[in-house]
Length: 223
Image (cartoon, rainbow, N blue to C red; front, top):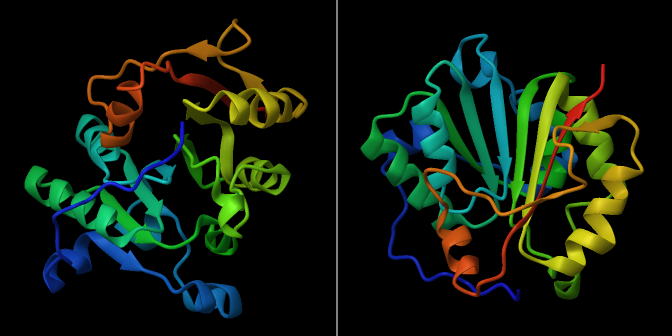
């Protein structure tokens, strides 16, 4: 389905909340000087060795905050390019009193250099925008993306992909993942239909109003 912007009534977090929950990483600085940024791993972000999960395109953060509340022994990082959406995520995390979550404003493609090898337990990419290329940008999901996913996932780590866009799923995501022998499906079916979780994100609720069931893949890194 075509993506529509969500109007959000929110404001930038206070300096105290921003220090705890929010990072704004400049695309240009990431590109020119990735060495100026901390490694995106639990020791640098949370001061511990707990497992780390990453959501790409986390939006307003409800789903990631819910995950963080369910697994306090796991750390969570959400990356998105829309500041106001991330501000809502910060509000949610603060209201829930979470200690194991951080949001980063940055294009994920420019974050790759600061992601260490074998550092991530699970990567979530749910409801990516299928029309980014029409705005002169590069789609996130492509062969280089799968190369990076394989590099940064720990052995046996998982990649969760969900979309309501059939063309994106059947023409790009499904054939590309199926052809990549570095990953193994976590389900017997070729793909899954529907995504029922205890807390659905703002975006999942929006797309479900169109009565288009989400299509889903879950795979693990071999080795």
